[in-house]
Structure formats: C-alpha cells, structure tokens
Length: 289
Ligand code: C2E
Ligand code: MG
Ligand code: MG
Ligand code: MG
Image 1: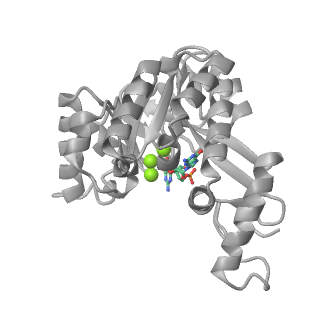
Image 2: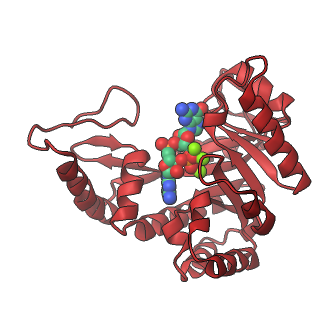
C-alpha cells in the first residue's frame, strides 16, 4: 500500500501499472468490488452559519480506502465511476448511508449529499430519494441535494420534470461549485435552488484590495439574496478569508478553518452534546451552545 505525499492523494504504487489507461481500468474494476465490500465509507464536513457559528448542515463526502493503494481521492474515483456507469450505485449507497446517519442526529441539522448529473438524468432518481427518506425516517426538509451546472446539459423538459419531482418530495436543492461550469443566469431563473455554493476558486485573492473575486462574490450574494437563496462559501481556510466572506454577506461557511470532514462517530458524539457550534480554529472542534 502506498499513499501519496498529501492527504487523499494518489500515486503509482506498482511498476507494472505503467500507463494511465491500465491504472484507470484497475480502479474501475476495484471500484465494483469496493462497493460490494466495506472499503467505502462516508465522512461529514460541517457547513457553518457565518454569523452564529452554528452548524446548519453536514456535507456527506465519499471515501475509499483501497486495500493496496490506500486512500483514493474522490477527484480520482468519482469521474471513473461516472464513466463506468457505477455512479448510480455509488451515489445511491452514499445517499442511503447519509440519510440513515443523519436520522440519528438531533435538532434540525441538515445533510447535504452530492448528486452527479448521471444520477439526476435517471428517471428513477426521485424514487430512490423517496426510498432513502422512507427507510431512514429522515424529514425531507433536512435533506439537501447538491447538484452542479452539468445537470443542465441534459434534455430541457426532463430536467424540468426532475426538478419538479424533487421539489414535490420536499427536499432542498443546492447549486454546487457555482461559477466553474457553463454558468448561465437562466439556470437560476428557472431552477428551484435553495442555495448557491460559491466555488473555492473564487476565494483566491479575496483579501487583496480591489480583488476581482470579491466583486464577483458580492454580485453572487446580491443575486442569491434577491432570489431568496442562501450562499455557502467553499474552501475557507484562513481567518482573513472568513472575515472577507462575512463582510461580503455570505450566509454560510465551509472549510478547513472550521473542520475538515470527520467520521460519523465523531459527528454523533459531538452533536449529541447539544446544539452544535464550532469556532474557527478553536481549540476544540465542537462546542455545545
Ligand atoms: P465538493 O462537492 O465541492 O466538496 C467539497 C470538497 O472540498 C471536498 O473534497 C472537501 O473535502 C473539500 N474542502 C472543504 N473545505 C476545504 C478547504 O478549506 N480547503 C480545501 N483545499 N478543500 C476543502 P473531497 O471530499 O475530496 O471531494 C471532492 C469532490 O468529489 C466533491 O466536491 C464532489 O464533487 C465529489 N464527491 C465527493 N463525494 C461524492 C459523492 O458521494 N457523490 C458525488 N457525486 N460526488 C462526490
Ligand atoms: Mg458538494
Ligand atoms: Mg462544491
Ligand atoms: Mg468544490
């Protein structure tokens, strides 16, 4: 087993896997087994109210501990799962696991689950969501589905039908990685999003005077407010970034300054101790209110 230099990184572990195609093929084959065994798990990262430091939601993030390769990052295995038509199975597993875990958590804390365009394009998807809710007993308004702009590349009328079906279930919808895709404001005009997640790439240089990214974030925040949507800034790592986000009126913060994703045991222990509040870079990660 070999882990790369950084957390969640991947590198070659065997000299016979000398080409990219073979490597991908192996990951694809192993992914089928991983889903059937217990190599996959879900970790949870807090999304925090920018003014109160209360945890409003936890984002479910898939993790894969490969028996030989060590941890493989989602940025590697999610695209492979998408191409190999395994994302439906993987995504459904994450959804059910996340809803089951969240149903055990007290209070109104929400669970945010990533949904690939391929899942969204499956006519049976709303049924799978309904099943995950029914099996777990989780209230629909505590489930937030994170979609990216790629869902709009599909057929226009089926996209609209899908949005209607999901809203009928009573779940919340967030537009993830906003600004990185083929951003078109017409998406926001028609789609019933409750939240816009501002991609980490817009955080760079946001503390500099005359920052173009700060201007962009400010515009996104105004737009979201006018459309009655929340905003989450992704990937906030430093205090000056946090301050800038508060000043720009971003409503929620997600990033290592509060916490990285943690295993479910750690979530439950801390959540069960009361209303969940965490301080940026605090000595203890979670503090009951
Ligand atoms: P995402 O949905 O935008 O998730 C946020 C990513 O940003 C996570 O990476 C998280 O660990 C990382 N992050 C959070 N705060 C910080 C920070 O302060 N600094 C930095 N550098 N990174 C931060 P992760 O877990 O590696 O996931 C990467 C992407 O893989 C996700 O991006 C999402 O698109 C995808 N993904 C993960 N799990 C799933 C899943 O179950 N289903 C689907 N369809 N996609 C998933
Ligand atoms: Mg996400
Ligand atoms: Mg994101
Ligand atoms: Mg992102």
